Length: 222
Image (cartoon, rainbow, N blue to C red; front, side, top):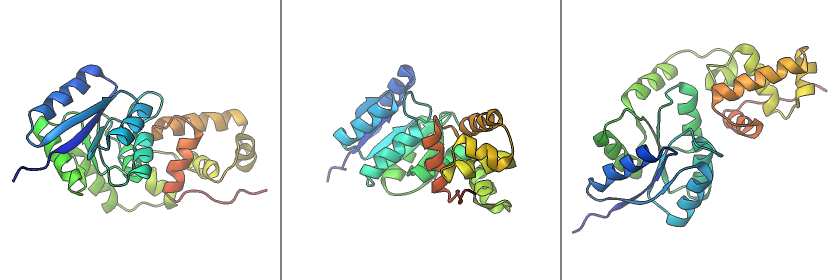
């Protein structure tokens, strides 16, 4: 009996790396690259059009991040497995990808054999982490995480940044946050800019989505 071929969509904004991945899968038995995309919106469109079994997804993409593209793809096609392949190795990015619906997270230092093996594993329904990432995830969950949901979900944020994120996720605007925390609007803007950078999000909507997925948000004082 002929083994069923797994259909793969490759998403990366660097042409040379993207073509290299296509070459990796061309050498792997029972794997077929059915398409490629260079940015987030194209990834979402091609995933819907081609219906691959696995989407190999970078995080840093133009226009729409790989995390948000993953969220959009999984929302419409929950049967589709997304395997993140990126240079970003911090915990926030890993957990954001998992919350968005990714089934695996590898670093770009992974060997071709590791990438192929992980692709097959996520297609089979397994969760896959690269060796360095797996160690960090285990260490995170084995440690006590004081400070509530924001501290647990976003450990790289300062206590003040977590307060600001909490208020953002509750629907507060900058002026309301400034009044609530007794700081200037400029200080609020600086905190929000730092939050966006640390969470690898492009705007307020993405930050809110991540925060609410993590159970962060409370009622704003009138």
